[in-house]
Each structure stands twice: as structure tokens, then as C-alpha cells.
Length: 263
Image (cartoon, rainbow, N blue to C red; front, top):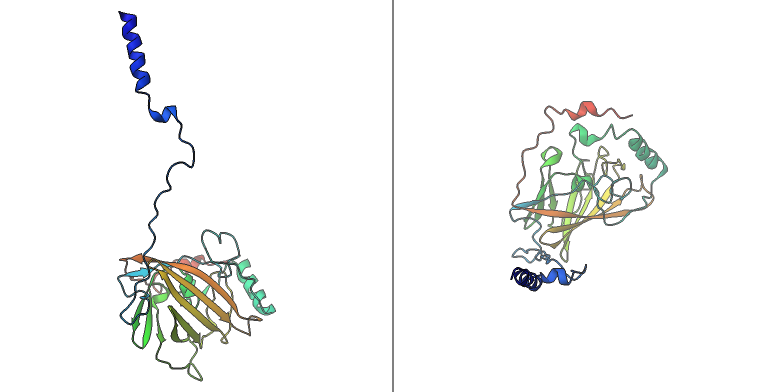
């Protein structure tokens, strides 16, 4: 009787054995996880892509080196491609000196505005507001800078007063906002690693919202006094829905300034 009962239990257990144990799962047989695709870029009533009028802000990554070279570029500074920068000899010497002394003279560490294109490569959010005759950029960092890009057809002034962000005029090229900037002073760096420029700097930027969550940023740097030819950089900036700019005061109690000792 007892042996018959034990035999019955073994038979039941065999019938109840999970299918997974009988047929092991082979890698690759599970369905791929469904990744939701970002929505198309929103548009304004005039048909142009909305570069940020909705509640939220663009949240740029730290781009240490806009040319895409140096340690950590793949993870911390994800540019679209590397650039062989066409330095003038003096500009290369200045750039290498800044790398060697750990950027101890970095103007941004002294609360000065980052300038262009560096303004788009610092870890502070910015917002964009489109008006009929201009586009306004508001930045949380860089001592709360604003930037006005006029889209009413005007030209640069013949003798501009040099400024940190330059004089900017723009136009639409399809779905891209093209910004032409000149009239810079020479007190900013092009990026954290210290690519230099002079007052002859001329920058052409393209802002393209390729989908709801992504802004494609491209900038062509033309400074014949610092570089032998123009060169172009490109990277993506993510959208952060629902976020607002916070108060950022760099001028007061700047503790980092005393640490900028270099080598």
C-alpha cells in the first residue's frame, strides 16, 4: 500500500514538472522589450518647430572638449564625431598650455559668461521662447545670461561693441533655426578644455528639434586669426519636460575660485 502511494506521488510530480525545466529557455528567444519612440517635434501655429515654448527646459551635457578628443569623451562628452582642429600655431600653444595647467584661468570659474558655443555645453538648463521677430534664449547658468536672436532680416552692425555672446541674427532653413553670431570679445573659451578664439570669431549655429525629446546642435567656428579654416561640431541636447530654471548666483561666495591653482 505504502509503495503504491509513493509511486503515485512520483507520477503526480512528474506530470507537474514545469515546462521551463523540460525545455530550457534559449538566449535570444525572449521578445525584445518594447521601447517607446519619442513623439515628433511639436510645432507652433506658424508651422515652425517649437524649440521650447512648452513648459520644460533643455538640459545640456558637459561637453569638455567640443572637438571630441581627450579622456572621457565617449561617456561624459558625447559629441557626434571627432574633429581634427585646424589650429594656428599660437592658438595650439595656448590650448596646450591651458590643458597643462588644469585650466586654472578658466573664465567660467570666475563667474564670467561662457560665450558661444560653450554656452550650449555647460551643465545648466536653458529655455527658448519664439516671438514673431526674434528668438530669446534664457540660461540658468553663466550669471543668468539671456541671448536675443533677431529674425526680422536685420544685419550685424558694421562696428559692433564686442560682447561675451556676440550679436546674433537668425533665419529659418526648413525646420532648423540658423543663428549667425559675430562681434565677440576674446575673453571666453570655446569649451572647458580651453580652445581659444579672437575678436574675429564668427559662429554659425543650427538648432534642429529632431523629435520631442532631442535638440540637434551644430556650430561652425570661423576665426581666421586662431584657425586655418572653419570647423564644425555637433551633438545632441535632451529635453527635460516640466522643469524650470532655478536661481543661480555665481558672483557671491564663489568657493571654487580659491581652488583654481593649476599645476
